Image (cartoon, rainbow, N blue to C red; front, side, top):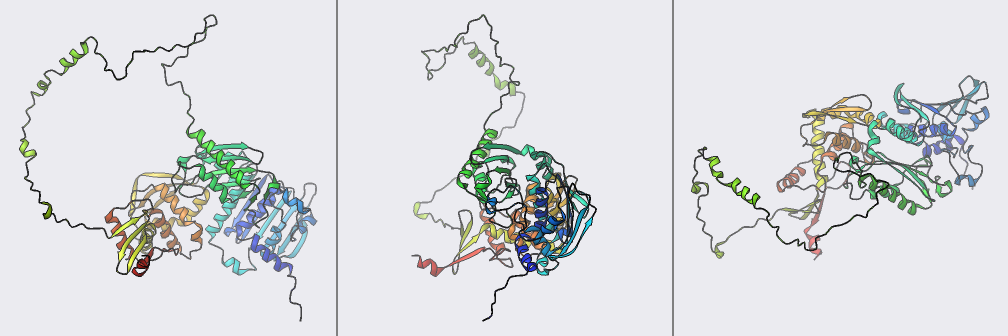
Length: 611
């Protein structure tokens, strides 16, 4: 029997590796910028065209590479950071696998110009689909200049499944922000089609946070700092009154590397217990500095999931640090003597003896004894004060109203006990845990998820308005000026047309600010800024990426989720009845647009079996 197992060619192996490391254009930006930082760069420029499909260019002023190193960098598992297996447990650099450049070169056309500090000329490489096309000397500045063109040109299926340009560029902005928050000392600039998106000067951590999000964010954050033998934790947490309806500005970093850690996120949220409602999320920027031997960053190709050796103790430390900072902010009063002129602190004289303070007490004091009236003058005055007060109103001639006309006596004849015939009308439904509507039908019992039902009703209404372009507009008496971050601004530019169709009127200002001029006329009195942020959040939720919705469908669903009743909201009986009627007028009353069940039926036979 012939042998059937063979080694894969390098080009195929690189494409397979690229599927793990290079998932989208943002992955290319992440890997190349991390390599530039490892090379000691103090300035990095990033140029994007067509959300990375056409061009991703990274220019840095780092150490650069020699001709041999430039060629070797595109080989699989070629790295300058690992020499032996034990080095994996002492990693302080961003990249170390030696897979990034090989994976990128396997699915794109790559050009590299690089030069060392002590060399007069640099080197220029061209690689396409893991095949070296040319290698020659060139003139270029010190550092490296990577140009990645036509990403996934040789894997059309991968290119087909990329999202829209606005969505893919949003992912690039997210990766850019994560790296920028880790390295505030590095100047980072991002350009989209030669238009400046970010220009971040080197500075301190708080300044970098302001540059990325908004200028006044420093007034909404509380610093945290603690050093233990296990870990050093620093950063900032949000004040409770500035919590948001979506977990947007939540960042964890370990040893200057972004990470996702739901377990530690619970530690932070638990510290806000009884300070925030259940649907609010605090912002935080938390940095961990820990011995590399106590973590494992090699459990995922993208290196965003990190395993800690002592997670339980770090959870407790983090929780206590956040609680301590919140306690200092909310509980500790500030001493201010300037507003009390009667408070005087006497100076201490040298020759005057210091006496112990004396306390004078009355041993005969009885708290239950009525105070004796002294002098009688005040009582006499009070009596004189109230004498002849009717004369003040003698000049007014008010018509007298008969007491009988105001309160006429109505004869009431109570029936005898046996004559009472009260028909008690029980409601056709009842609410279980304020979340489910339980009602009886011919075939048994029906349970309706209140919030999902309302979301379904609103979704079909908003979708009809979008398709017919008949949204009503309600101008705001006082327009609201809203400060957004950069990725929210990018998404809002994409959604401004359907939002206007629904009745929103939005005017873009400078410095990532927008002015909200009007809201849809069909909405109740809601907070405009909060509503707009919720719509943007729901539009970008992970489960929405799985929905094959057009923009109008996603927009209608996002607005429905933002304006639907919540589980804790109380409905009046007539509102509940109207909700049930409106639900069964919908085209699809049984399921939400993302496939979640709204109605569940418990048959009479199933109820009988319970007994």
